[in-house]
Length: 184
Length: 287
Image 1: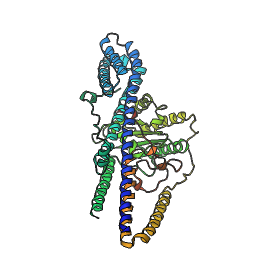
Image 2 (image 1 turned 30 degrees about the vertical axis):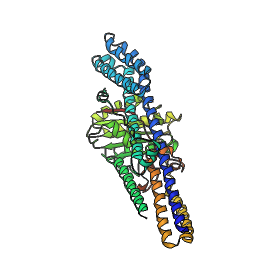
Image 3 (image 1 turned 180 degrees about the horizontal axis):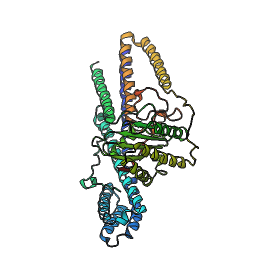
Image 4 (image 1 turned 60 degrees about the vertical axis):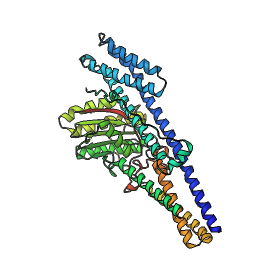
């Protein structure tokens, strides 16, 4: 009888222990998601910070393309005013589109294309876009890890009790895929 | 005991899942080299003399700053874009020191005629995207002429120079360095921890044997063992890709070589990759 008691207590302790471990891994997976999201915003901000410099450089070469420049400036302003994650994503998409137009127009200005400062800015912007893409991939990876933890057995039991539900990954809009390919 | 059996099965399933996940992650990227890690010349684009010089520069940088400048030549990207491929290779090999993230990767896809310099977080300030693009620009004419070896070495030299500048030092005169590499065997740590673990389990075994009798104690022990194993696997999976933040993975001094997180790959670990990461900084181009 005593032995049985011992075994039952032991097993209960083991289950409780694994429950605690599951809870901790869920919690840290959730924190990882938030951290990765912060990384996306950082990188979006980094690209936006390059815009004033870009506009100043470009202005000297293409005075007659005010519409394109305005679009870029407006998208940056929209991003600066964005609060929620959705607004930021929308503004970032708008900025990507505006920059795409700008780079397309820039093709007609050979002097601009050979400007060293412009070349460097273009590279920085291309690098920023890649960083945003990497940050988004990491974010989705973090979400996937978290979702696996909360939706597979035995994590789903603990998750159900504590109200942890799966999170939807970030899906880029179709237009955001068209990152302008810059060649020199 | 039936409840316990079901639990056991589910643990096993989870275990398999964890391993499958690990395998899927490692697909398509070539295995990291264990020797001459600064030049993984799968396409034989670099001549013997240049190779020697390049490796010497790379070793010196690693020895001094833990910075790792790595050149990788591959045949084809197999349809993936070079940015994604470079970032995945960078991370799965773990180029650069895990805490400093001071790795640089020069990836060349010969058949695609594309190249990319991917810079780890720690060197982004010194090797800006603009500078990386410049280095690639200077490589382009040589590559168009088919002078791959020359172009790669020149690019490597400029990147190395920038790395020295980043640490406020000047490159050594006539970069011929000796300095035999002290081999750091890290597996002894694994053995040590494994040993402690074994002793612990044996102690517990004796305790159980006294209380429960032989058969039950063996079953309980087995269950305990399995639970502990699964816990460690879980811990490993949870920390997948976060080696830098886990202190115990890089506690053994300079450049521990668990970059890819594939601790079972074993083999000669002289030097090895440091477990660095990259956030997609750098520049791409083609010729």
